[in-house]
Image (cartoon, rainbow, N blue to C red; front, side):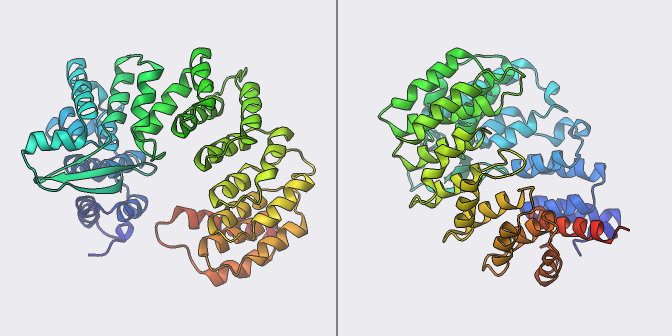
Length: 422
């Protein structure tokens, strides 16, 4: 059976989609839902994804229009089973707004208490208690959803992920429970070595969303902690407090810029310094650029990437200051591919069509990394440079299912459309 369900009959479409869900093939599901997205089949696939504990796929199906409200109770699983899985993606899919009302508060309270037990006891200890098994524990890191990864443990035929802290945080939020800064911080610090863990992220986003002076003060006090993990936690809460503030007042913008400007000159831990520089890049202010520039030649690629990411269009014209241009021209030739790609993106978004910047992007069309070549094609198209057309032809069509590659090449199509207009 082919996977091109856009041209197949509905039964084939359903079989291809549900087969991909059952196999846990997220990439194939992403392709299929874009090519064939009948709401009925998406709903069936959603129910299956939930039952096989494929939370990432369940969320993907919701994103593409699955109507979970049409799911029958027997198509889903109890909340406690979602908690036991340890997958925040699965638990949140079960509590999507379309079906959230099906679960009474008593069930949500029990789910919260169960999540707390898993979190406080620890996955390994709870697994051993439940299975009675004393064999070696298998452990691996897996993606829980598009953005976050967790550790997955297997023992005695039972497999559980370690996202219970995030599940607990989400359940408390739904119940209107206000957990203290200190307790939330301790919850996040259990995963301090994994910044893309859903527990760390859910806690920092929740605290930043409070947008209150008490939380700001508590986070700011961590900047002088001797523990780098606590400094990192404080930096992220402060950064997100400003980033997520969509109010007209934006009361934390000034204090954040002042704090991160000073902090960037003193921080020695690489992870914390990277977070501080990312925070600076989210401020459109000459002081932020001045604080980024000393780190252009930093020996660590993560730091250089944060610097490249941080340069923005400070004024127009010119779109970049002379110092920022020189820095980006240096970073687009960086030994690290991620740094080169990030610098190319920033140059692509410059609006003044400087031929020097266009030539810099053209120079990386021969890069060994296909995504850097595509980023250069994208940038040349935005700069109305005809070299993008031949470069795109040589690269060929986007890889099937790659939204990133499609986006890059779509810029070339728009360039050609502009060029061909009378």
